[in-house]
Image (cartoon, rainbow, N blue to C red):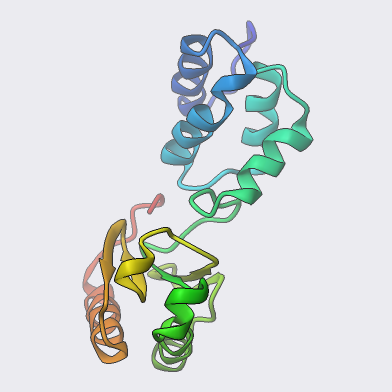
Length: 170
């Protein structure tokens, strides 16, 4: 984007993505996906860089990043569990799943465990309402799981965590 890229080599790949989208604003979501893949989240300075590169106001980049649940402004945990709490999912146990996860792990929805091993998220709607309640485990969409099965799967992650080294990006 500029003659002097920041020293971080991830900016080279991000700049290439901006160029592939011809520095046009309609590439914002795709470029933000690439930025999040590179950093694991969307730091403020990266959002500003993307906004400058695509000639959009920083408020637009921030607005898009905060509107869609798959973007995050803070680092995610090594493992992430996302629970749908939209109407259908909530009625079929989504709220109970969130509460049970918080009790079992000590990680509140919207936060990451202090050791970085687990992030728990509650989102308004994921879409596949016919499979309610919908839970996403590290990107794997599942549905119709009982509360106990969700908690057991997450507890298996946390039990294995001491044996796994954290690699900086989730």
